Image 1 (cartoon, rainbow, N blue to C red):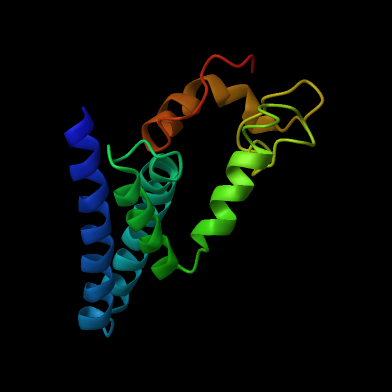
Image 2 (cartoon, one colour; image 1 turned 180 degrees about the horizontal axis):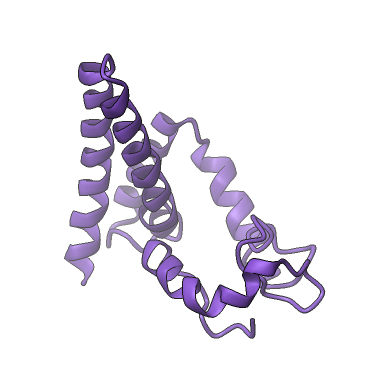
Length: 146
């Protein structure tokens, strides 16, 4: 599993830049432009949720310096690895799943995790679509009471 995560993480970086290169090469074709922009966006989301998250925790590579080096790649995406790591470690792990304190749980209203969160009509289907979201975001806590 350890080697799979490294291969997956490096592969995601390669795929992102491959899709970006396709935007530059095939950008004159509107359908291809939109296709590769969407693929870039999905790849970037999965890359940050999985690879950069694990590297920030020092869990992607066995050697800490490799995790640090990999976090520098996030700078190519406009992120600041130092700020993101501090924000995530100090404001998410210090207050996990505490409303109004945990900065990572109130990103969107797609999943309703707390009774005092706003209730939308689509939340009645949450038990169906949360399984598909967990494929994209494996760290999704499926044990929370929805």
